[in-house]
Image (cartoon, rainbow, N blue to C red; front, side):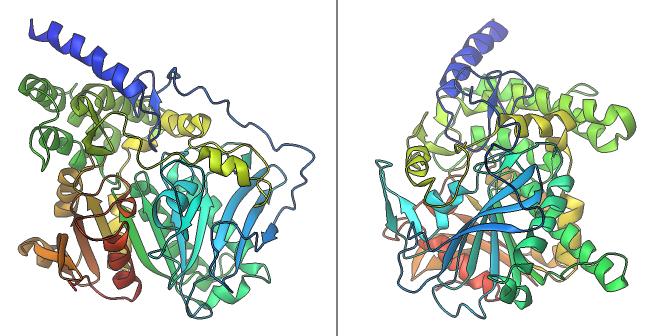
Length: 494
């Protein structure tokens, strides 16, 4: 009887999730983060080749300067367009100079997740110079934009994501890292941006960025070392900072967090207790449970590796992730599903496409890119070793999470952090959380050790800078932790 109840309830959950297609993580075959199978609500055709008559310029940029869109602060330079990796691979970018101290301000890269989701989400819904209005018709200037004191570069990657277009061959975070490195070499050699090559560099990312961030940072460090050794040529990138929001980094330590969060979180239980019981069985069953499948993925090598890791993604997301959200919004659990906030940005982007030099119709998430990653099993591979390497290398790292986010919840993220083996881990794990205040108002709780910090923000969903807490303005708390980290400081209350 319990199984029948669970199956009926699962069908209801699937129908609810089918209505929610506004987030960064695709729904495939009715499964959040599923493998194969097109959801009825996500039938956007993939972009398979560079459209004509646009002509790529391999190894160079094609740029629209000062479009007047989004950033309206007087005297602040902006540029958008494409970096052409090859004749058939073009990556879209939108750059905003810092509002203050442009010449010396760090260069900050922003990447949304998916995989295959556009970084225009971060720009317009979260932390960019402008923010989409609730009716999705226009934008307003963002006083807490991250380009107040940083040169901010939004990148749609891999190829095929957002406004980017061309042959979509990337299916792993490692391959994505190589393309981003190539793009940055092109970007920083351009005379309009070459002055930024000497500035400090920061990577900020969220969601699947828990994979991207550590792997991109580790790849940059390895390329820098190879340049120093003379084995490769290129511009040295002065990587100093990595920030990861609500990121999936190490599935084996994070997936049990879904079970914990669904039953006990600051808002409400998400599902009945029998769901929790069933999910625990799906997690712990020897040899065939989610944990065992993730471990098999970790241990795998050779021709069977992709199948094992894709199989783990399919099983775990079918039997744990999708089931336990219930009727709530997986990106902001205080709301029912679907939650219309943050507002949709597709109609606005369509209205400005020509002005910013975009050459194809924007897609929030490219399903072909997503499927490429699902087919390699990249989702269930751990980027924790890369994260540990980056922390130990001296790069300042901040991990942050919103306590209203289910899809990459703080229970899992904090378990991942507790499992880390870095030069700061013993000191970090011995600490208790301290209140994180913004202008004297409680915004969350945090820990910090050495050059590593973590903060859990109260009242924030998956896209942390899109939310407000109490009398704080939208994005104000996120702007504080960003500013402190970019100033090479550990977090502290104000």
